[in-house]
Image (cartoon, rainbow, N blue to C red):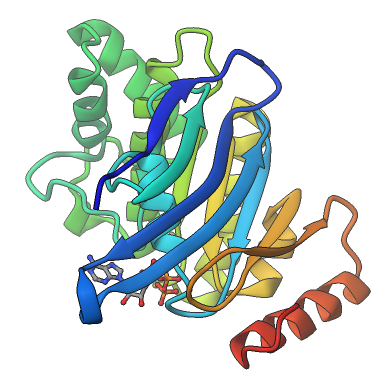
Length: 258
Ligand SMILES: Nc1ncnc2c1ncn2[C@@H]1O[C@H](COP(=O)(O)OP(=O)(O)OP(=O)(O)O)[C@@H](O)[C@H]1O
């Protein structure tokens, strides 16, 4: 199958990411799996969008396509952002490097000079409230602290290459492996960091409460093959919206979404 994905820069400044009719098929013939089919999605610069859906509906696949880690089978992806940064459930830090050096590494890959990257790494660690443990190695930090280092590293790689273009952070269930209290703290931290940096965020989760708490907009994907079935503006979210999203999520899980 020929991939017809086009990645181009958007001319309009009011859209950071635009996916049009994105389809993704894994494998061939009788064993082919259609993960995504007809996904249309727009994200504005600085917008916080949560992607919600049942397990296996294609959320990670969609995020990987936006990240450039995988290619769509057909459809188009347009980015008007700096190189996207990705954050996963596991922080994946270099165990032999200190927190500061882990953050600096992202800056080094982006071609930032030695002194500037030291300064920027410390700024970012202070932003995630880890300025006092910059010299610690990952095994000396808690799980929540390691995820904060991963957040600082992700911000390093997306904001440094911004060059005036909006920054984009892609997060794939980044807090799912943390205990409830740490997750709650990190959700607040993420909101504070987002407000400070004006980075567009696409955040994948299957937790409705998390999606409503964090996002300005919640986008629900259908069960596989994933496509957008419903969106909610959740800036001023109420329990009623939470219940409504839960109801629709249950419907897509049982395959009755309209
Ligand atoms: N590399 C691959 N090869 C074959 N099939 C794949 C591959 N990656 C994903 N899939 C399939 O595509 C579908 C979507 O997977 P994906 O990981 O995107 O779902 P998800 O919504 O992120 O799931 P979860 O919430 O459980 O992480 C699944 O059926 C999965 O088995």
